[in-house]
Length: 419
Image (cartoon, rainbow, N blue to C red; front, side):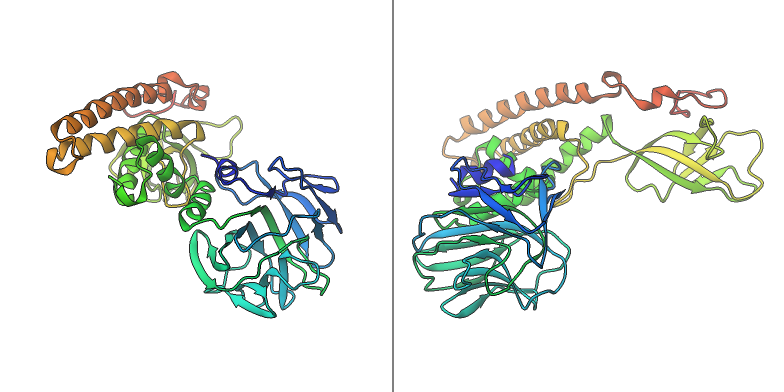
């Protein structure tokens, strides 16, 4: 599910994405019509916070007079959640108001010490460790029956009690006391209930394209969302996702271009700098010619040899076009967006087949029948995964490589990867 979808799943009272590129209105994306009004001259249309949604935008507050005036909101009870993404730029005011009341009596503040504060009853209620500047962070302040938890980047970071009922926020970015926020802000949402740790984590995960974002999508496909009775651990699912990504890399690796330098008198170059190399596609030599000149080459182990008549007499640049295994880390991924569903399909197949292999003792009360069911589901998914991979294979795609030919004659398809 997308980040927007996860937010809307929890029925926000208002959701100011702050993605406008111009205008005087901070639109409410919740469809509840609680639009805000920009004041000052914020820099709109800035790059957003969501790795999973590159089109999402953000607003830059100058720490002087930029703010959003909110419409009249119904007073909230003692259960609510305030959520946002922010990227503070520098130490500014001792307290920077991100979300709160004009009079400053109730607010979520960013302190000059780098920690968050939920301010009420004349006192700061601080989060844990300081937050890094000039980096996007997800924040959720969830209050249930007056007892609250502050979350930073999906993890609990502080707690507080006796939050008063009747909070009616009316400003974003500043209060009347001069507590002005300086930095980027996006995806501000207000809920009429306290979100639990699981839902906060789901929102945070949906912002990323890496394992953290793919893992809950895979659990949803496998119907394994009950945290108390999960059949697969996070490590298991991550392993299956990486295996599926590796299989995609075999047919559709990440294209890269790197400049290497020859040693005088040698045709050989080390391929060691090309990490997670799948194959070399083409070699441009000499570099910088127009049109580019591509030469024949061969590879053996970690060595690339230029098949040219005479070795370079001096150190010269060689541009290597190569294919890299896709990287799937906790937060980030090089997987093409259009291939994510196929990778999820393959990971699901691997997970089901592995579970089936454990036999009757490791599955549900359905016994052998349940194991057989997992096996059939896994095999069906695996067949569909293999078909999906063929859609991304070399024969199914127009490759830029086909637009070029080696400068010299091709030795063989096994040693020349271009042409």
